[in-house]
Length: 296
Length: 273
Image 1 (spheres, helix red, strand yellow):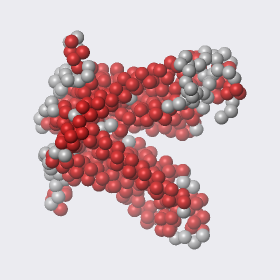
Image 2: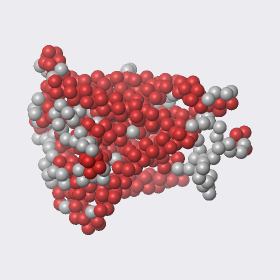
Image 3: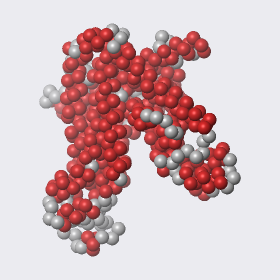
Image 4: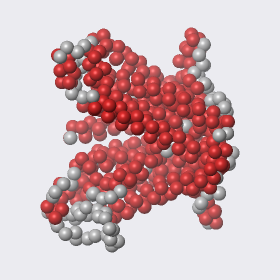
């Protein structure tokens, strides 16, 4: 950007002279105040707590950390959390895309209300969603009873219940990432493809899907990460049997209730590390697919 | 809005059916069940449950916590949005990542981090203990974790809005002799007032509803460190479903207001830009 201001000599500069230029000159005032205020606030509320978690975790030593993480109960909780989050995020990716398509492209009266409803899981406290989902999917509940009677399947207090809770919290994440992409897609592209003789299915597979696929993966990733960390919605419906229906977040909570801070810290660090690794993997996969798509 | 030239009538009907069933099952049915359970013993019982003494104490605590956390994060959100959107400097990306961190960290771990800082064996636990100030298992801890989990909301709302508006209007105001504060109050703020409102609403909804992080640091002392969401848990675990759902119905109305205002503010912005 070249503006007339860029060529003027700086009126004020930072007392500490950096070898590199820290900040572009601007006549707009307030940078020192707003920058230092933001930085101090972030340092106190975000950096310091994260730092203490890492330091306290490393005080346990590698062997201490590994001993906590490779405890059978912890490993089973990891397995349960990962599997249920995976199923829930896949379900969300599928149905979230359909819902986004419905909201953007299908004519329907009163669609605005449905559109607003999508964000309900973000607006409702997790404890509230937790108890209501439990009541609905419990053996005596509306849906729970139906499944028990007709399919002999128990939903609440089994891993299926955990998946239901995770799907609930993930809904807005997929719909809100896929929706805007569908919205901004040019219908000309599809018309051209159709007029060139492609059938509708081909247009969907070769024109629409490649465009929205990266956003579906992003939505999947967000839903997956949210499901892995979710606590409030899940603990009511999960049943919370150690080794069976105990998610990792609950295990950390239980350890804290027992004042076993060291174990809680180790498991929490393992959980954070695992989810960051998975997110990294998914991001790599996404950049690989989008390269492939744009390369074609 | 692109119209659907692709899908046939049958496909459209299919998509509509699947989407509507999904929305009904996961979003509408829960609301109906909350209201039905909350009012299942009549309006009088509902009112008695709401005006129960412990419930009112929990409500007071929840309102207090939100009244402290939301303004602090509002000020922070405005400050950091101004910093990031109006200036070019090194480390902007890093600041953006730091703002998003509270959303990426599971609530239980957020609570744990504050226990590690202020708990009895925490870094500052002994220090505050000397002055007889209790933070964990007390109200200050609840306020601190609430600030942490709601920190990103106003900032994330404002940064894109302020960035999109650029700096031309502010430069014009300043070159005409306005002071920094005048520029901010009269030029910048009126442009983003809906965004600020939206940020406050989202921040407030999360502050009043946070469960996991608060559960870790609260200690569940009835009438003292029991927020409304924690009180719902206690009532539910005591099989007092009607009371738990009566309070939940309050949160349904809060969520309705949140979603309505959100729709209004995003409509305002999409019209303007």
